[in-house]
Length: 238
Length: 278
Ligand SMILES: Nc1ncnc2c1ncn2[C@@H]1O[C@H](COP(=O)(O)OP(=O)(O)OP(=O)(O)O)[C@@H](O)[C@H]1O
Ligand SMILES: [Mg+2]
View 1: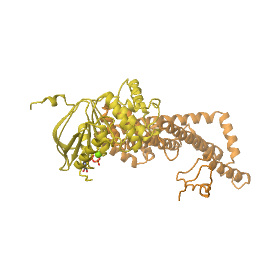
View 2 (view 1 turned 135 degrees about the vertical axis):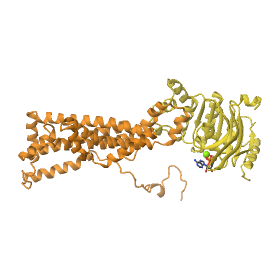
View 3 (view 1 turned 90 degrees about the horizontal axis):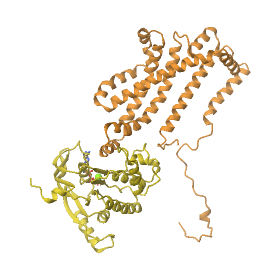
View 4 (view 1 turned 60 degrees about the vertical axis):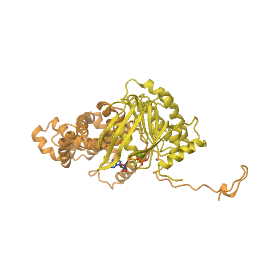
């Protein structure tokens, strides 16, 4: 196979990815390349296979049958929908879980997400938004080349979500990981991503390069046009 | 329904008291509530003895028991017997805990371990450990080792069962997390498995402590020449109910103290948990 220039520099390279549950193909030939530092948002109806794709990239699908070519960087971090903090470990211990001698970096990382001074709190003493920020700190302290996030803000209220969007944008600008963010929320996808892709029935059916200037606002006419095209790809007629 | 009013104005609606919801938890704990029941028993016993309704040969009066305890302490019998009993219980408990945890880890973390170990332990669980006593006496004689092994056999089963159950019910989401952050096997055990199984282990420990005292009572009344059980057995042959009661109180105090100790450890070690009781 002759590698083209894009393939050589891509952070993520997926070719003909198939994943089956009991003979039913949930992913049916997905092709996807993500450049280093690129922020990609993945939209799709419930049950369209978004989490399945993400778990394949995270290497968490050893129990699933499938074929295809999959190249991911060595350092991958995952943010789940639940913060998934170990309830028996203090906040800082959660952040540096499995890293040796990284407590100082862990502290800085907590400071970055605005939680300086909460190092010794128990996770269940934090609010949902704060817990999710700890989870972000835990991901970023590992300096990932690829950040995978499966509806990380799904459980948060609208106001907290907006704050988390700003935080995530800031952190991604600072650390420059390639990002694949799964979300239900079309506006969230447009606000955050460089590119939005749409998954339907196991295939990528649409993609939109987002070239709106920051700060992106739903009031922007360009924003509305992109949103209309994406909703159309999702099968929602207005 | 809702009417907007100016800050200074009071309307009938504002002064109606807020409907208080009935709370579903047990409510605030009563101070020293745990002491109430035992105190009542003591009062009834004293009244019974003072009025002569309780025959001294059936049950000595509380004050006789107290003076007898004083005598036993004065001639040193109480301390030396207590020391012997405590030692036996703790050695048996310690060995049983180590054995139970080791077996739980082996069978909780490997399928081969589970296949080999879990069956025999479940069978052992079905046989009360005191039923093994005749066999243990034949094998080990009536010395200290028989006593300690009997206690150990009663202890390791609850430790194993609850620790193993704790291990097996650790949320698979945490296992997934451990994989994504690339934990080593050892870090996985240290950071996820052991803390995750700790609540189960501590519950097992409470059962184990109770079991240890139970076994101790039985082994000390068979062919013993020291210990609280021996002291009580000797008193029986002379019909001294006061000494028997001193022995019972001692067992009770030891049981309560050790259970309290385990609960204290529980509270310290599981301070991250918020439960109905807290
Ligand atoms: N462990 C499993 N066993 C069997 N089928 C599964 C399993 N996990 C997922 N599926 C099926 O695969 C399909 C895709 O699931 P997936 O979780 O990827 O959807 P999703 O796009 O993430 O949906 P949502 O937006 O609701 O999270 C669904 O139809 C689901 O029923
Ligand atoms: Mg999903």
